[in-house]
Length: 472
Image (cartoon, rainbow, N blue to C red):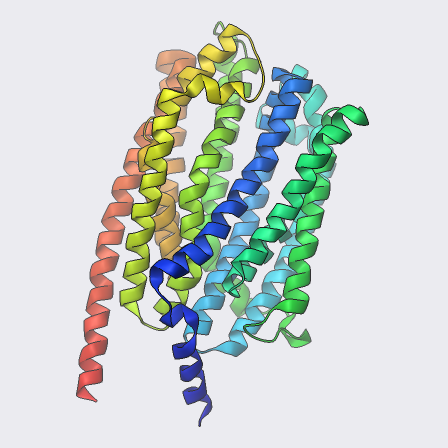
């Protein structure tokens, strides 16, 4: 048997090519969703203890530090999503040598980029926080919190990269275990460090950072010692420009989506700071409220994002193997399931806004008034929010990240940024709330246009393959 025949046989015997699509999506999506929920728990638990122990000003401090988190996430998704999709596409096409080198290059890229971001964040912490929208009162807590969080950023980046690679290797439960280990550590030691050791907000930061170190250690161990789809040897750990450029090209959509979110977050914080001073709420209340609402919404958006991530190995492998029927089936199941989850979230936001906000501690009546109104209006199109992440992830999975990037840019930069500038000029602080619904509608329409075109293109390629097989 020739090498090509052996590789073709391995492709046809791979569970991604043979097992029931529904079963595979459940197998990969459920751990991915749980991992994202765990990541949300990091932030939720922190916010709850900070809200109870410090108050609104502490919540605002973590919110102005959040752009560092999204910047780090952007880099980790660039490498993690890009390498995982490239890995499965190569594996589906039978190119195991490239697949091995992709893993090694991803690990080296993560180490270099993570270290650089951590050092920059630690050294320039105060000017960065000023740029992110911190007031003098907020800076008292934000500086000490962020300086410690900066130490954990390289480990957070490695956790995301290794989790994506571990899922691509067919071990979604282990990827979930990595996230769970860090989250459990964080939940246990948040109150210990904050209240027992009396470390205050620094204790919250240390619990988060040490939890990220634990998760990263487990992920690195798997890639180095337990990777089973293909062997990962010393020769894999050699940077290659061809592989790096392809990883970056595929992961660009996910990366720039996060970077665009960072731009929006910074603009949002500064807009709330400026227009909040002109309102009855002041600057700190709107910034704190938006931080709480962001954490709440991330819990529910974890479902469509997790579904999209869970479909990635299945979609990438079968697209690489030109099994378009399974690719289309996976997308259909993903979009229906994610829309159901976001519709349920929409109903919760509209029916129980104050109850959700109260989880994070008490505040003034003005605080609850603004937070309730913001949650209901800013997320009133939540039922559409499953379409864009699933569709964007789909295009990344088939190696067409530029389309996913365009969809992300449409929502974040083309729509949200101008609206965040214009609407508050007309309606003041209330104008901020009406920006997201318009952006969500635009993103959903664009996603619908692109996926319709892609499905027709895959049908044509499928018919062409059948005609070629018939001719032979």
